[in-house]
Length: 216
Image (cartoon, rainbow, N blue to C red; front, side, top):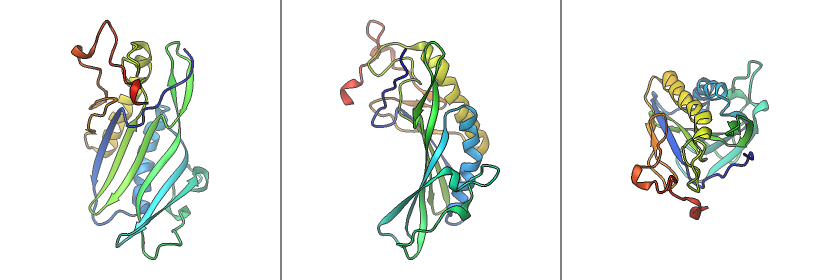
């Protein structure tokens, strides 16, 4: 199989965690959350962070500002993200961090077991709201399901990739000591606790799953 993946315009699956927090989480609190969870994703080779994107907004509301940083400029000698490397935006008088997005590549395996890299194999971001930190994990590809986007069955590809995603979700649950909350179904997939649910039996015709390519 060629190492080419189609990426759905919306998530195929998503999982979120809400972590209670006293007060309004700051940039250091969000980075601490990421420092605990990124190693779980790195351990499964689902994410190698290259850039972090920090979104700021005025504490009282108004327009926001996004600043991106190469990951090498915001980590310490041990590789942990450090808040004192994050510059405050000059255009805001009273900035509050809103969201931090992680951008990077992940490894997936084809049916022959060959390794390939894909940009944003997983999407990870954390958000700050009064009283909580929100952590979300999303996937946008079909390798986590038994069927490709065009309905072709590819169970071997699923077997080589989906267990890694399941272990990562379980690992993040262990970090937070909170069960994952599967996201709402989309046209491209439905999440269960540890992965992407296969189509229902009534959606399978002549051994093929539903064709989703009309939405690309």
